[in-house]
Image (cartoon, rainbow, N blue to C red; front, side):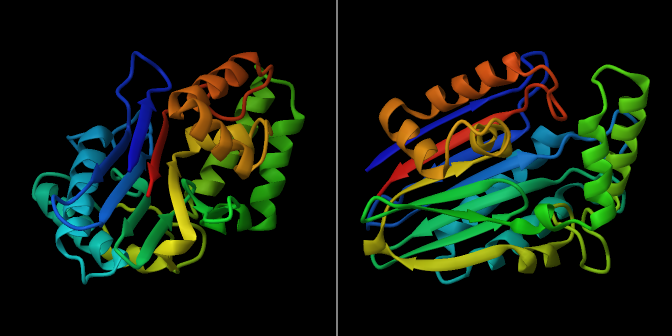
Length: 279
């Protein structure tokens, strides 16, 4: 089995808000991986004294422990319990009702002798390399299915000249519209793991026969930019790059593309994590 991972902050002056880890039991042929992408909070007070790296470490650690120890519990159940444990760890001193309380996207996978189980919540990605060499992306599509008025705001931002007051105002309006749909109480919009365990039921989940999966590649959206933002190749090409040159090479190519971009979308550089597990 080959396990290789890299995680790099978008800004060396800021803490990395991603989390990545793997558990391999001492006996048996099973294992589990967890990758989280913490959601950067606004500059103003957001009700939590701990910060996003504390949150992703707590949530990711709990998710990994439960995935490994509770083998009969589905990954969605493990995520719900991990969210509840993390919330309990700071609910007495933090305002978890704040809309931007620490939260994260989630990718998890667990393999047994006969099956590979997966879970994806929000805009991180899991790639399954099949026995025949083909690559299947497991994605949560809901960020791409936002209402038409939100897409119109995004398109307006892209059409405006960079580094102008007009573009800054349009970007702020777009961000507000997207934030209104994050973990909306009516279940519409898109979802991230924050303080409500019920969000785990909204994750994309599934099971694949172990014999049909050769390798797994978990990616935060800072790494999926290679495909989704800069169009440097497709998912199969991304997997081939990581298999040949390693996860660090993928992140390095993303960084080169980010630096060369004349009008970057959102952050010029984002935290980027890639975790390869060859089964």
